[in-house]
Each structure stands twice: as structure tokens, then as C-alpha cells.
Image (cartoon, rainbow, N blue to C red):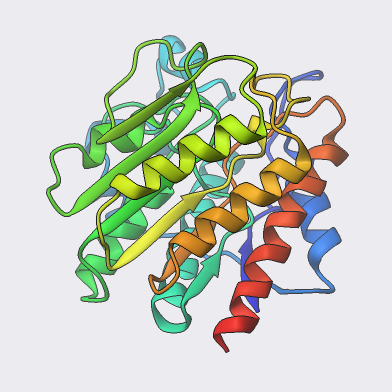
Amino acid sequence: MEVWAHDRWGIPLPEGHRFPIEKYRLLRERVAGTVDVRESPAVPWEWLAEVHDPGLLERIRSGGLSVREERGLGLPWSEQLVERGRRSVGGTVAAARRAVERGIGMNLGGGTHHAGRDFARGYCLFNDVVVAVARLRAEGLAQRALIVDCDVHQGDGTAQLLGPDPDAFTLSLHGARNYPFTRVPSDLDVDLPSGTGDDAYLSALADALDVAFAADVAFYLAGADAWEGDRLGRLALTKAGLRARDALVLDRLEGIPVVVVLAGGYAPDIRDTVEINAATVAAVAARDRALS
């Protein structure tokens, strides 16, 4: 199975920065023997302009973000950051096309759900999932889109972009007392109390999936940050619970093309995040074999 990665485009970060940039390289190296890892292409600016405000894109492109905008983004601007962002989106677009053709696709990154039409924040420069939805529609490959966001943080950017869209349903399952503290409502937001463990989480997810509408394509944000040891998570899922979460989502979306992206993960030991992500890759590869 081919998956897409963009880890060759690292970004310069201050020492001690919390963004786990090395995760992407370590994950690619770990799964390279089990899946065919392909380099993500950079999407054209025109595709980004179908989703994001032109003024915001110009500031991102030229390095003209205000101090407040850069602080909200949480990442220092650089040309490498912009290139990496475009390639992160490109990986999700490529995975989406594969999903429509073969039943499932995966980007070893993406899930940048805090990027909205006129804001880039929370480590999210562009909204890869919404750009991919727009591309599938433009190419006549799909119309109705379901977003199943299991990152521990609420998907405010995706909610803003797709909220008025009658052919999109945004489901976000996240920690109630966590970032972002000012939220844009999703079609269905499931706020989980701090300390929620495996059983309660899986029950809430199953109930939420019962509400989601039938779609031509689904995007699954498989955040590793719901893990009990995550620095930014506040939930209490075990690694076994996260594997059960992946299985539940993939089983419930059977018969629908599914695009899997990895979203967040901030374990103190980066190897834990890589292990969680690698288990998701294994689940996706197993589903692909079953579909072949």
C-alpha cells in the first residue's frame, strides 16, 4: 500500500519547542518496510485559495504574518514551513484520490484542523482535509464528506470552513477542557471530561458515529494525543484503547472511501507517539489488504 509523507521538509525550531518535528521522519523509517512511502507533492496556491482567505495566503507566502498571527500559529515563519505546509496538504489530496479509487488512503501527517479560512493557528498552517474535500469535488470524485476528528483538540478550523456546507458533516470528539478555548461549533461536538478512559471514550465514539450521515468519502483524524501519557491531551486512553478506536472507526466506515491522517501527538518520549501512529498505519494497511 502506498502512503504519503513530507518529512524531508523539516522546519527550523527553537531549542525545546514542543512541536514534534522529528516524529515524521521516525515514523517513515519505522513503517517503510511495510508500506510504500511516497513523497508528498506541493499543492498549487490556487488550490489553497479555494479554501483560505487570499490575504492570509499572501501573508503566509511572503512572511508577512503579524506577531499576533505567528504567536497563534505557534511556529516561526520560514520558507521551509510554507513548503512543508503545501506538501502536507498534497499528501492528503493524494491519499484522498487513492481512497476514492481503492477504498482507503493515508497521509503520514496532515490533520491540520485548527487552520480556518482567515486564520492559521495551533501548529496548523493550511487545512489539508478541507482542501482535499474541495479537490475531490472539483474533480467530480465525491460530493458528500464526513469528517471524523479524533484528535484530542476540537477541530475549530474545519468547523468554520465546513459549517455552512450542507454536503459536509463535521464530528469532533475531544477533551472538554483543552485547546482551543474559544471554539467554532462542529455539526457534532463531543466534549469528554479530563481523565476519560478507554471504555467511556469508545462508547461515546460509537454513539457519535451513529449520528453521522452517509457520505461519499470520510476523513479520519487519528490523533495520538488522546493517549494517557500525552503532554497536551488530558484524556486517559491506553495504547490498546487507541488501537480499538482505530478499529471501531474503520469498521463503522466500511463501504465508504476513508482517508486517514494523523493529526496531533505530543508524548514526552517521541517514541510513544511514533508507536501509536505506526499502529494506525498497520490498521490501515490491513484494511487495504482486505479490500484488495
